[in-house]
Length: 327
Image (cartoon, rainbow, N blue to C red; front, side):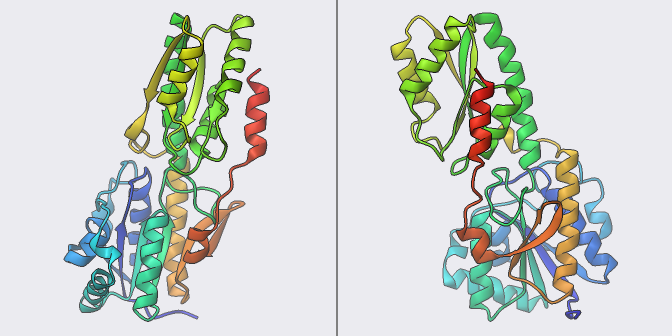
């Protein structure tokens, strides 16, 4: 059954990720094709409170599919975390006769969306998973994850050249505060000698033994991929290893925010386009309160509460495979 939606708003919240612009483009053009007008909200939830609204047309999103970041800009709003802030945001939506809201972001974004929806008497809100961490339950892939992986792989391939030239073991820190998806899959792709993730306790002694075994096999350099959420941390792990192996060169490289930027990959552009298009049609069909994702290649819908509270578990089998392939 079609729901009477004539105007929607869209915002991006939390950390930016490559492909957000492609998702905005898809939402805008899918809505226009359904005779729905679109309002862009600048600076995320804070912009919703401050009424930073701009009309979006088909031409507004021309030439953005290849751009990283988000042209609507993003922020983290302390005011929106209060019930008073959310009440003001809801009133602004009502004042502008906006019938539904599309939010793009991660778990914090969806938590805010769920609160707004519940406190306003089931106001229609739908979410798209935009985060490089790929840590949301209810989707196999999040917008920006594939691009971030490729950024890491390209960077570490270059580091590998220097490691081999100078017989250095590099500890490369990648993003992933709570989840090791970037570390695991980039580590496999670059043939890392070891991968350290938040989901497991790092055994420094075992790591030292592995490096020593590699040295005996005439492997004089190496790459250790470390997720930023590792309980010990790249710098401290490197210090402890150096302490036990003082005659070997160790370096720490933190890739940092380079992983969030850059033109989105083909996979992220297609994923963002599919999810943005689906979000408009799901709203039209009268469903909301869900994150739109993709599972086994098919569009999926996961309630906000489930997407936030459930863990997207790391594949321990892949971690074991990576270790066996690094001998």
